[in-house]
Image: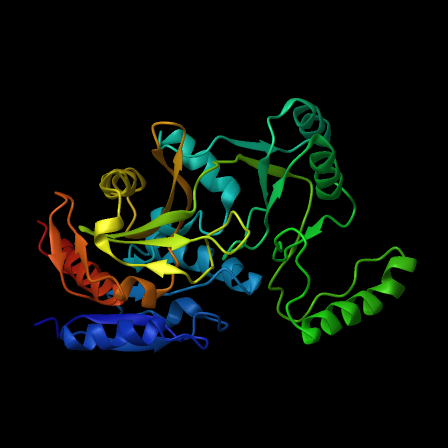
Length: 355
């Protein structure tokens, strides 16, 4: 069938995402070569490969630093198909990039303000309509997202963003929340004690060997707050397939991402979200993309809060079916990796048949 195709896959680091790619590729008749693209000579490893697949995550930070340039060289200079390609992944876990991209492509999204100068951010804070959502550029599962309710809170946030140490990414707990367990509290107190000598020496505390959450500074990002959203709607578009489910907010919180409270009943999905997601995916030219939809205003217009090529595969697989771009429903569950491989192999085979 596809026995003459060899696809290279970056060795997984504790996740089973890549293993499901390998299973799907072997079922389609392709040969799989496991790669170590973080080695000293990654480009020599891909010789003889017809395509490269690398499911890179947003942490540790070093993985992003490696994956983007390596995959870009393979795709754009060596002309070997990659998954994810640059159109799909260059803006992953970068809310600043996404804000500019969504605006440029006229994809409806909450109004967003990005400030690169402290004075501009402070002036805006005095006249902004509150509450507003403050975000750092990176973070998943509602990490680094908080609600600011007044100009005073916004000024404090801006001052922190443009301070010498900036802001270190962390979860924002609901108002009044305390660490859920005594162990978490002890870890927090231990970290504070360890930081003491560095504070006295006016130095930033040492980061761990793998930098999961980098300090963020010298920018501020705010987003329009959209009230009356008890859930968001995640639509994952892979080729001509759209999988959708609703994610309900945490208790006493405005955020749904990372709550784990899902509803996969297709009857609860607003079909405007499905149509909008197909339109957005076409504009982005993405291979695979998850769109998080909220509703705005009296008309309940669906708008994209965030996009991500990387998502929980089990959540997509739990959907009882998917829609195609004609909004026709197709019953049956499938792993997203199966859809990735089907489209990726078809693209490679199709390119070979071109004159």
